[in-house]
Image (cartoon, rainbow, N blue to C red; front, side, top):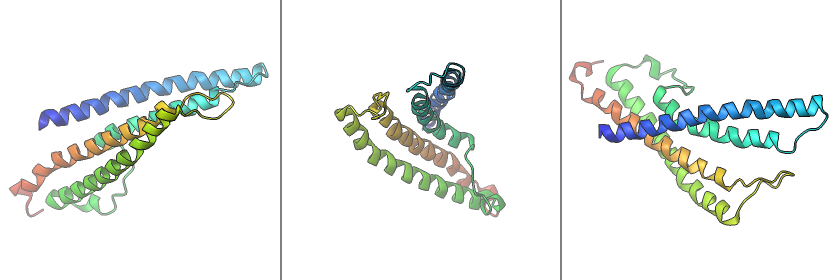
Amino acid sequence: MKSVFSIVTGLNRAFFALAAALIFAVVPILLFEVISRYAFDAPTVWAMEASTLIFGPHFMLAGPYLLHLKGHVAVDIFSDKLTGRPKAVADILSFLIIATFAGVFAWVSWPLAVNAYSLGETSFSAWNPPVWWLKFVVPLAFAMLCAQALVEGFRTLPVLKDKSEAGA
């Protein structure tokens, strides 16, 4: 099981690194747009849309690994006060809820991505780039979030079996 956990977390780490690298493409694109618009009075038809198309995968692909890093915003008013087994139970329930929602979103978004591909979907803007490929990021990211939530839940299970924290 540990090797499966390592594979899932490793894949999510790779997607996280890709997401981090993508943001370095957004800055020069927007800089080019600003210079073109204000210095040369020649705005582009593609820069703002390109940065949006890059930013979508940026945050979608980073999410699963952020779950592993515990980097998401959490409302932990109650769970912060818990320790030992009660905290583990609350964490496992949270991971199950996350996995369920992410799994449902992955399942529902897959046919939408396939349909976008079959139609050769574009953005319908003046630039009109193909966007069908972007639709596949959604089920991928949610499937990886589901997998990472399950991994984190399984990693928390040993705390439930720990006899030394039974009274905590």
